[in-house]
Image (cartoon, rainbow, N blue to C red; front, side, top):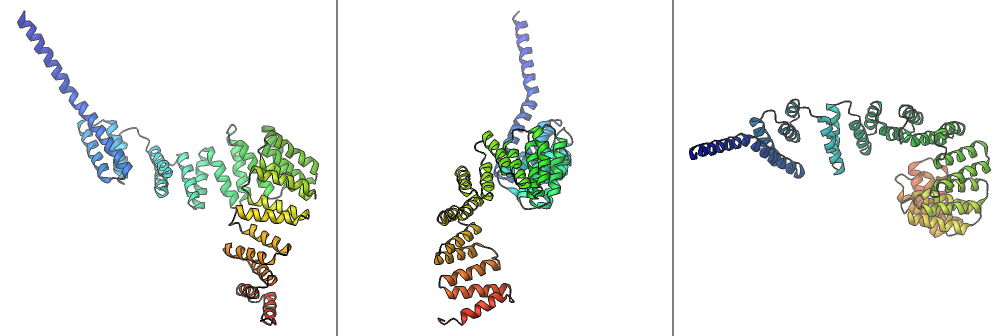
Length: 425
């Protein structure tokens, strides 16, 4: 009986030992893979070629132990790619089902987040090279090309993404064309988007943009036609209501009806600040200056970040005969936006109108210093202001600058002679 028990124990022990030995290759493969991925992640994170090469070696060893090891094959492909061995990587990945384009896209996204834009551009390009129908990769490539100033390439990438059905490309693709003043091209893009993507969340943007194209071109009747279609889908959109009010006023001159639409926009969204500015513009044109000033003030209170609104506010104060208020607003806008050339220009004009000639001369000097290529009109204005302030030397210098730009400018020639023959000279 004891002999039988011993035989059973020995047999059990042998089975256990056999199982352990059978599991050793599996366990070792998993350990090697884990070490491989640790080295790979470390290498990618620290941009360490040594760690990546170590990962490559570990994955290769793992594949030698188990040649159908998909995990090791994926890791080896990544290790090879990160070293620029793209052909070898693709050969490895061809052995398994692996979306190489998606990997390159993910690497491009990571590089973009880290603001390593050249790397991001490289990986996005690799993604579309591998899979020319990867619409998201084309879209990301277009966005990055646009941000880096490669406008033509950006348009081409957006066009491909859009043709592949990537709805998110419609907005930046159209806006790129719009900013190039290719208005009909931009409209075509957004109209096609409306046709192709009937349930997309961005549809309201596309409708607004099409209307804005016609507002930019001052095609008021066409804008109203588009708005009729847009309202059938979005009857309570504040932006569309604002656009309709502006279109009606410019088409018919009916201020009362136009203001009603702007009031509707405000009632739907009290923070929709453009409607406040729109009311100010219409009331100013209707010469209801005090009412206009109140709406401009409200718009700036809600959103103080738009210089042109301050300028409209100040000009209306001027029209209302309140030069002191206008001057205060011009001073305010230049304080808020110290590099805004035209704000300083308007401030200089306001100083001059208020008889503050020295301040006007200082302000116009600021205008010229801020301008990359000051036009002749700036120097002409400067000469007048310097002369009014009694600074005849700088007035002469301004006329001389004009003659550098336009040697045959008769006004500058005559005034320069006059100043040079001035009795105080």
